Length: 113
Length: 114
Image (cartoon, rainbow over all chains, first blue to last red):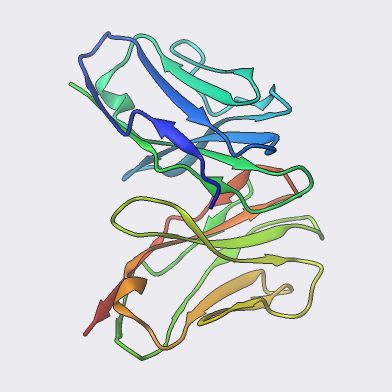
């Protein structure tokens, strides 16, 4: 089965450090999402791309978060500087052209201490 | 804001029995898509079932079926013949159109008793 690959699976970092999370969408999928999951807020959309162009990043704190798609096989989410409140599971998901229902990666569990 | 509401934080079911999870949503659109995702302890988000709002027929996937009531903006999930492997968090979600972002409900935890 095709899968969305996220790395790293776990990350523990100190406050103030830069964190980069990576996502390899399913080959041929042209829509990529970044979601954050916390106990308090549930699943929140941070950003999403179609054909590598950002469509909506209104859910992302702009001062410290950035999301990019350097090419069709890689999406990145960067936090600089990281803060304890950024501790969460970050999911990447991708979807095919004209399709609906997306495939999620296994997530990156981020802990900022 | 377009919201999705799951009013049951937790549901318990006996193995082999049936459980129904409720979901309501808010929308002003006539065409949209609805989903149920399962998240087991492994945290992987797994698509269980999906429904196009323009289709009147309720979607079914093996032991999973939905009751879609468009006028009531309700989209419940029925799990029949519950199995231990069904124990997980279940999230209802909605998107406005194909390729559009998903808005999730708060989730319902399903416990399956042997």
